[in-house]
Each structure stands twice: as C-alpha cells, then as structure tokens.
Amino acid sequence: MNDPVIHATHHERAVPHTPPHTPPDTPPRTTPDAAPHTALEPHTAPHTAPPDSGGPYEQAVDAFPHLLLEALRGAPGTPAFEQGDRIVSRGELLELIGRMAGAMREAGLGPGTGVAIRTGLSPEAFAAQMAAHVLGCRVVSVRPGYTPRQLADVLGVDVDAVVLDRSTATPDLLEAARPATVLSLGPVPGADDLLAHSPGDDRLPDVAARPDDVALLTFTSGSTGRPKGCVLTYGAMAAHWCSYRGWSSIAPGFADSFERYLLFGTLSSLVVLEFLAPCLLGGGTAVIPEEDGRPLFPYAIERHRITGAIVTVPRVCRMLDLLREERVDVGSLRALTVSGSPLSPHRLLEALDRLGPVHVAYGATEAGIISLLTPGEGRDTPTSVGRPHPRVEISVRDEEGRPVGTGRTGEIHVRGPFLMAGYWNQPEETGDVLRDGWLRTRDLGHLDETGLLHLAGRTRDVIMVNAIVVPAGPIERTLTGHPDVAEAYVTGAPDERTGEAVHAFVVPAPGRTPDHAALTELVRAELGADSVPRTITTVSSVPVAPSGKPDKRALLERHLSSVL
Figure 1 (tube, rainbow, N blue to C red):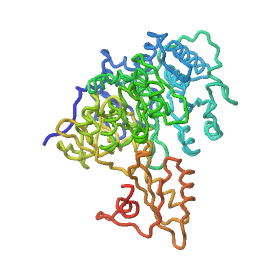
Figure 2 (figure 1 turned 135 degrees about the horizontal axis):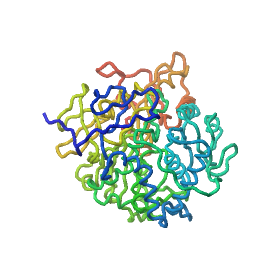
Figure 3 (figure 1 turned 30 degrees about the vertical axis):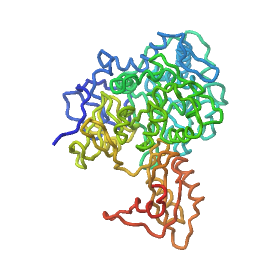
Figure 4 (figure 1 turned 135 degrees about the vertical axis):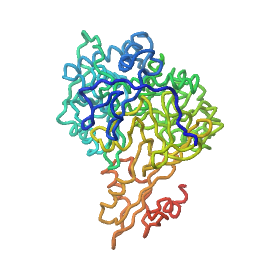
C-alpha cells in the first residue's frame, strides 16, 4: 500500500529553548534525545531554519519582526501603505513602530506581557502590533463581532494592556478590558494615547523574544462556543513571514502579485498578516481602500489598480455576479487568492474565465495556509485544493490513525514550521489535535496520484460562515435552552453569500410554539452574529440515520431542498 505522505523537505529537530513564557498548563518541550511527544505537549516545529534563511534556527526569530524592520530600513522612501490620499513610506512606518515601542515600554510592557489589540484597519494599527512584537510581547488578536461574554473570554487570557482606537472603543470593550491598562491610537477618553508619545530617541531596541516565546494568540471558535486561543511562537511567526518564498516554487510569479496588495478586513486574521509579508518584504504597497458605497470587489481593484488580494468565497461569488452585468476593468490583477471555505468547481472555472489568475488556498487557523491550487491546475482539476507548501507534509489517515493509500479518503494531518504550539490553557484540546508533531485538521480528503489534495468533508460538526468556524453544538444548546424548544438540530449548507450558511431545525416543547424571531435574537445575544441561523424550521420529528443518530442531511433534503 502506498502511504500518501507528501514530503516537501527533510526535517531535522532543533533543540529549543525552555522559554519563561510558555502557555499555562502545558508541559515542557523535549530535546531531540528525549522521549517522544505526549498527547498533551504543544507542537515544536522540527526545523532548523526558516525557508531560504540560510542560517541556524536562532535567526528565525530575527526574521520576525527583525526581517521586516530591515526591509523598512533598506528602502525608507518607498510607500508601505496607501490609504486614501495618504501615503506612509517605509521610513515613516519604521519611525512609527519605534515611537510606539517607546511608548509601550514606558507603559511597562516587555517580554511576555500580554497585549490585546482591537483596532480598525490603519498603518498605525499595524505599527502597534509590530511594536509589541519588537518588545517581545504576547499579542492577543481580538476580532470584530464578539459578544460581551466572548470579549471577556478573549481578554481573560492574562492580558496586561489593551490597544484600541476611537472606532473600537465601545462600552463593552472598555468594560471587558478592566483592569488592564488601556492604550489608544489617537485620543480616547480614559486611555493613554500611544501616538502622543514625544518623538525622541526612538531607536528600536533589539528584538527581545526567543523562538519558543509566545508571539501571538489568534482565536478560533471552540466546541463550547467560547473562543480558543491558538498559540503561535516567534519561531512560527518567522516561518509564516518567510512562507511566500516557498509558494514561488509551486506558483512562479505569485510573489510579484503583491506590488499593490488590497488590504481590507482585520489584522486579527492570521491569513491577512501572512499575506502582508510578501507585500512589505518585497517592496510592494498595502492599499487600504476607502468605502465608496460599492462592493470592494471588483470596484476597488479597478480604482486602485490592485495586483493581488486574498478574498473569501462569498466575495468572489458576488464579484462574478456583478461582472456578468457590468464592465469593470480588473486587468491589473496578477493573482487573486480565494480562501476560507470550499469554492465549487463551476464557480472556480467561471472565476478563471472572467478574472484569469485565480488561486485557491486551503488552510486553518492552527496551521496557516496548507496548500495552494494554481490557475493552470485549477482548470485541469477544479475539485482540488492544490499542492502543499514545500515546508509542509501531509498524511491522510484512517480512524485508527493509520496512513491510507493514494486516492482513499481519510482525515488530513499536517506537519511543518507554521503550526500553532497549542491552545492557550486548554491542554486536553491541544492533545486532541497535536500528536507527535502532527496536527489533525479534522478535515477529510485524499491525495491523488499527482500529489494534489482533495477535500471531502469534515470529521466535526461545524459550518464555515464568512471563513469563520461556527460549531453546531453551541447553537443547538442555546436553542434548547429556550422553554419553547424541546430539541434542536443545526447543520450547514453551501451559500454563495457567506460560503456556508447555518440552518436550524427545532422540535417544539409540548404545548409550545417557538417564535423564530426570538430564537434568532437569543442566538445572536449568546453566540454572536456569525452563529445566527439563516433559517429556522419547526419540525414535528427528526429522521434517524442507519447509525441511529439524527440525520441532519435528511432534514435539509426534506425541508430545505432548494439550498442543496
């Protein structure tokens, strides 16, 4: 039997430092001569150098953020950010990072301190995060849309300071921030303004972090509905920021597409940060578009002559619909990368016809971008999600963890330098997905005879809404917590507006009639807007699958066949 493990390179295990700032409740890392990893041990990437670094692993931590700082110093007069009429040069960005690092140091921040960042999208927001990394801080990414309870959970992970701005300084955020120090980008009542720091000797200090120190907590939805913090070390962040070099071997010219990179959304997204790297390191400009009342895609591409962007499936589908009706010049595009949820083969082929250089990326918060499908292979095999990064290994395994043969479906496992070290303060969850240096993605798929990866579903009950993992369980528990509901079943179906959409089916409690509007607001209040069902259907009973479990697919086919 052929074991379809895709080996990109030989991997050697480095002797890691024993850091003073490891995730709580996680055991110490082992040396190469020690016993194998236990189920609860965070992953330590077994690589001695980041891609193309040409040096020992210790240089990887210099690559983040040191490599960025050197790139800024090397071309100070070139534009780094463009936002409306404003241009921020690389030299100005470097000065901004230095000024903020000085202000943060005066506020008592340094190696290992937790800094939560919840800001709008701006050059200052990026500079604030880089300043925190220069000081060796542990940055906590806070994405938009959290409920007050979720905010409390995210800001409860040993946060010493919260950085915000006028657009995000809501009462809920300020309340959840207590008792941490509140810092701001511009004047905000009750906060210390980082930008008011007087320019002076703002020479950047040496990067303080070591490879195994925690650089970033980026959050994904947990099975309980509470966010889980994925721990990325400074070594892993260094690998992420060098990863674009490896993609060039799979997709020649891909890095050239970042000359004018469309930056939108939120910096709390790991993939947004990862795609900023080839732009800022390669001499490109990150263009932050101003809203003009029209969809960013395709109009911002035409307006700003964008050469590259990463986009979710719903956005690309809306863009294709618009392009059927209107003539918009998107000829400046050199690469458009689609990610976040599966793109149907017919939509991919339409995108290739209308847009040209469309790539498909597959990844996870815990692992970063795993594979990339190029335009050429997309035309030939539109059902695939491409080939793994040269530094990533893929193994497809059965339920017992044994490798399966080429073409056979199993659970996808990955290994490489980009993996998280574990979930913050959740050793059981960590042990469930990280074993012996491999990450269980919980996605099903197979490798074909050419090495292309194909997805076939998931091992867990989740829905991908706007590229965000939404577990079905917390929605079901919230619905059954209402006195009108006896049973609740939640599943997902493809949706061109959001990638996938949540659909709920409820069995009434005896003598009760569920109010769908009230149930919708209950889910919104408890779990946030992403978890709100697109439809709620009242049913008298639920079909049962041969396994004896409720058959959610049959519910969709019986009551909502139009969505399939």
